[in-house]
Image (cartoon, rainbow, N blue to C red; front, side):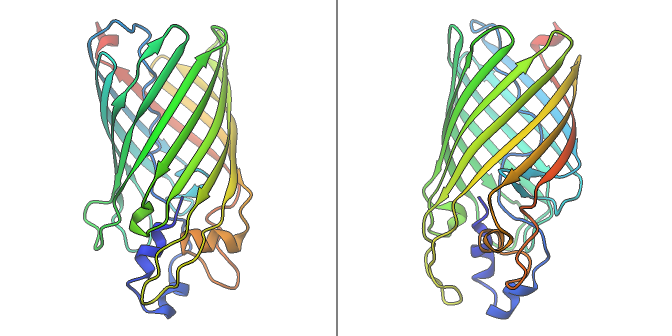
Length: 275
């Protein structure tokens, strides 16, 4: 992720590309924890609410908040296997507004121990001077191997990433083990790939760097509140990070993709849980 920086710098003179603030810029899902699929597959309508604050908004290895705290909210409505939600998050990215909005819609059917979520996400930054909004399609099945151990796969694809002309694809595997105490350990290993951008008057077409991303950490849940502490890292060099995000300096690269340990405090509740 992160090529939308190209869309931003393409409207600037070449000298401005090296003068942007050192902050990573890929659009992504907000920091709020997405509501878990309902355990009762026969339930009809429900509403889920969530809010979170994190020490650094990191997504697939990038900081979206310039390594500073970020707050986010989510609102999701479900009806049988259908769902739609709106996520908002505070961000700090060059030439864009400080509000990121991600709208989701899709299906989430359950087949015994298997849950399959498939849908579309639409990323936007309301109030920005330029429009870099774009859709991303995804499928993400999860399977409960035991009552405590869950594994998952996910595949994401965007045909025109941030309107740069480059496609992007992210594939990942996840695992989570939950103890009776409310403590859980989880991790993700993924591969991010990109296509070639479209040439503009101020930027030639070029292939964006592919990379491997992972995170590993633990969470502790008490009633509706969850605390998460997690390590994020990628195989990106500082120079590759600069190519993807457009932040930092050409000679020294960008620190927007540096490894990070991040703490997140989140709250989630549902209408059905209040009954």
